[in-house]
Image (cartoon, rainbow, N blue to C red; front, side):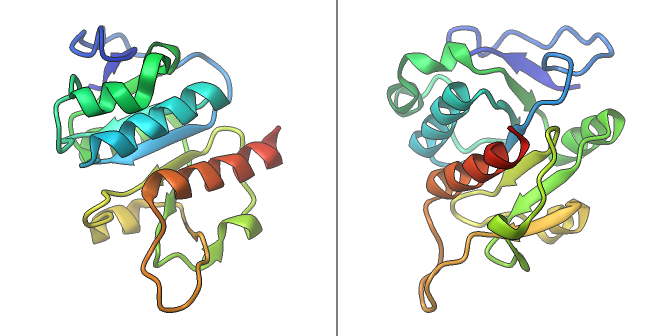
Length: 176
């Protein structure tokens, strides 16, 4: 069962366990962070999500404690303005997603479709991987779509928070 918290002050409050979607009703874009391992990037993405009105799904385990000072510093006072749900594992996240009928769109350097050519839906869940290792093959296989932010040849990747912001901006542009 996912655990919900709003910002760091109530980060350890357990999800109440009722059978319901953890975020407000209706179509809502979501940003999923797969086992994030850099608190500053996570804080930046949480701040972005708060500003853009995205819900956030964190797939545990994270590589840091949610009370980490770097997470708080990069998220500033925005952490109380974003709906965050923590899932104990990818299996728990996948079960929640299947029950909710939410499409998983994975951002990956191995994606075949540029994010600007992809048709986003209002209730998509946009997933980014760990900064250190991306996501395992099982997550690639579970994704309904795999998209990429094209970059110049010979370069590895963008910062995960930058890529997430670019993709979220395009998704919001498309779905309003």
